[in-house]
Every structure is written in structure tokens, then in C-alpha cells.
Image (cartoon, rainbow, N blue to C red):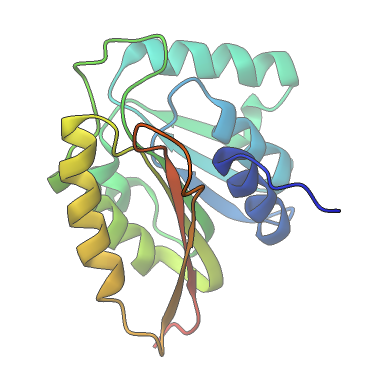
Amino acid sequence: MTQLVPVLSFAHQLLRQVVQPGDVAVDATMGNGHDTVVLAQCVGAAGKVYAFDVQEQALHKTRRRLQAAGLDDQVELICQGHQYMNEHVRQGVSAVIFNLGYLPGGNKALTTQRDTTLAATTQGLALLRQHGLLLLVVYPGHEPGRIEQEAIEGLVTGLDQQHFQVLRYQFTNQKNNPPYLLAIEKLSTG
């Protein structure tokens, strides 16, 4: 029997299926660098990962994690909000991942915000190549996360099904508004 996997593990499985050596990918919320490392492994030495975060602590932790894995050459760490993605990424990407909320182990008062996340999600969707994936790990268990969730849900449910398909992966019997994954595949670039 196949076991169901946690939300973030499922997101990483999807990334490993889509992102190939030589590709370009984006970690829109680098945090402690776990998603950045997965993307760097997938793109390999010939690829490129752009990773964004507004907290220096996130950049330092991610840099150390990448260096320990020997993956720092193919990653550009950017100490800016993900809403500035278009200023740094100018080519088509195979994947963009957002792990929303606050930095684990950091200041819980500093969270991703509705307006910047919507702007970055829109930019990420435009950057996706055909059959690329944009993944949003959504954490509605705190007030800023609930506000962000409502806005994201409004955006993704309005996407034209001729151009995008959206999957929601969620454990429905867990307490306290558990995180869930929205996986968006770009069907066409038109």
C-alpha cells in the first residue's frame, strides 16, 4: 500500500519530477533553505536557482546548508521580497515554490503578506515554461496566514483551466488548520 506523505514531502516529490538538470527554478521564500537545496540538486551544476527572503538570518542558514552540500555555485541568494522576482529572473523557469508563513525558528511576527505574495505568484505564473509548476505551501493556522490564504484561493480558482490546472493536496482530518499544498501546472504559454 502506498503511504500518504506530508505536504512538504509531496511538494518536493513534484519538484523532483519536473525540474531537470540545466533548468532554472525559483525558491520564492527560502527560509532555512530546505526547498532551495532540493531545487539546487534538481537543476545541477548547469542550472540556476534564484532564492528570495527578506531576512538575513534566512540567507545565512541557507548559504551554510548549500555550502555543506556543495550546491552553492548554482544558487543566487537574494535578500529581497519575492515581489521583486521579475527584477532578477528574466528567463522561463520550470518551477517556483512558496513555503508561506514565518521563518521556522525566527520571529513569528514576520510573515509573508497577502499583497506581496499575490504579486510574486502572478509573476511566477508568467515566468513558468509550459508544464512548469508553481507550488504554494499555505499555512492558514495564524491570522496573517488566513488572510493570505483567502487571497491566494481567490487568485488560483480564477485561473483559466485552458492554461492552468490546480491541485489541492491536504489532510482534511488534522486539527488546527493544517498546511496544504496548491500545485499549479502551466498547460500553455499562450
